[in-house]
Every structure is written in structure tokens, then in C-alpha cells.
Image (cartoon, rainbow, N blue to C red; front, side):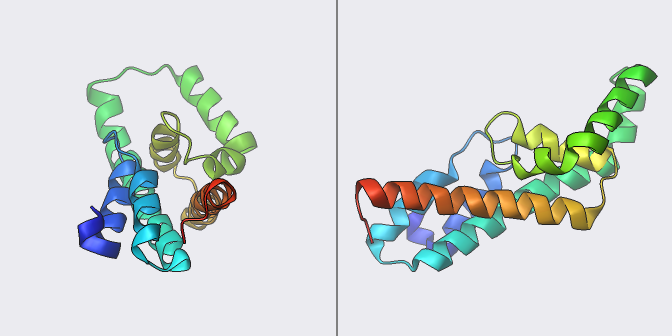
Length: 146
């Protein structure tokens, strides 16, 4: 992916935020010794990862009714508990949408529950941006690669 530069990083980050098992961190870290701008790398990775999460959001928003009515039976009380959880913890939970395994379903459920798109965007983008900054700061402490 590094041969594609920023586009490759965007694609890797997008796919990593989908249900495809992929790591955007490897692509991000591989670009720095090649001389790519640190802020450019962080912003492109954040954008790709956010767009992937946004895709999950819309799959949840537009696909939930179809799948829930045809293939999955969820009791009304279970759905009510999910809504109550999101009312209480949704924003904080969306900040952690970058966490492997739980992050992708969180963003799809946010769409299914019709979480406000501005709220979704703020918390998801902030979480993903913070994750990449922390990753780079930790790596830079161990081995300055740029």
C-alpha cells in the first residue's frame, strides 16, 4: 500500500474501519521512514478510517430495518436496552470506535439507532485522530522514524 502513497494509506484506513480484517497502523508507520509528512499521514489515515466508519453507519441506518425484519429477530426489550445504552454512553462509545472487534459494530449500531450524524462525526473522527496521534507519539518515543 505504501507504493500508492497517501491514496494507499486512505484505502488501507478505509478498509480497516470496515469488517475487512486489516490494520491501517502498519501502512501508516511504513510511510514515515519514506519521508511522508507526519501530519499528512495522520490526517489521511483519520479521513480514511472515518469514511469507513461512516460507511458502516449508513449500512446500519439503511440496512437495519431490512435485515432486522427478514433475518434477525430482536425482541423489543433488547432493542430498547440498546437504545438506552446509546442514550447514556453512545458518545463516549463512539470515541472508542477505533478499538478492534467492537468498533465496527458500534458504528453500524449508531446508524441503526439513527444517532445524529454531527454527533457521530465529531466523536468518531476525534477518537480516530487521537488514536493515530497516540500511536505516533508512542512509536516516536521508542524509535524516532521521521
